Length: 394
Image (cartoon, rainbow, N blue to C red; front, side, top):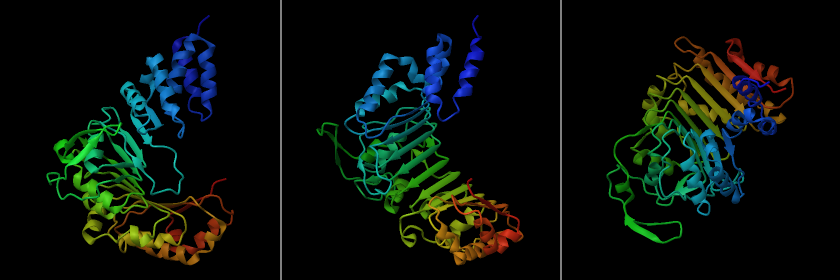
């Protein structure tokens, strides 16, 4: 007796959502030939190759060369990419024709090494039209034009994350047509290919329209270069913007009217050096669409400073939810009664007529069970307004 293939696939799919499903899926693949296809499909849908393991990309490339049918299963790929393994990575990228999410990093970095970058090894664009999400970490590109060229063929790209990205030519261009110094482009062996101007390599027509952009540990000058030079990749119609220890004002100057969700994370940098108060014109436009504001900080003392970006908050008439997350929560933080009181007072205006605030959500991390009651007593306006929600993990 043989089970119908639809039932076999359903059994395998029930196993797949669990985080420890890989061993079970491998076992399923060995049970019978009818289990093999769906098990392989689920096993290889998300591939995360081990970082700081130079041979991992080579081994995976060899696997795809031997079993070419596996490549079409890969939709989410994370791997280490640098000049020494670029040939293998390029072969992998040319094979995974259904890839929708890609994360590349030159190697595992310590979480506190925010200024360490390696030269970007990419000699050409990704040529993967199905790609919707790209994350690039810890690379130094020649300039913003090189970065844009890398993305220009991913015409379905929706979300871009740039984490600790920099440029070796730190010039800000006023327009794409500006004259650019001639630069010697070298191949992976270090030999010069030709002397060109990078601006000449960039087409002028917009081909990619992003809806979600994330900057992590990116300097203001780098962001300005991207905003000035990106023309093929449209950064002027963002629905969601996230910044982590990176300035936000210039991006919002272009996207104030379109941003629905704004995420601000602040951990390591001096607050005044990263965040400047938004100009009245930006605030007025931001208030037309912004519905969700997410703040990710270390201590409650940082909250008033971040909120001052938005003036007295009166312009944020469409804001429905303010979410605060503390990833480094410790018991002594709950004693900051003054910070919580200021936070409560600043958000009070959003409870007035003409505003749409529905929820202020606090995710506290692990702390004592008595904390929520104390916080509510320190935020009387939000508590009385019925919008305060506090979550403490079990």
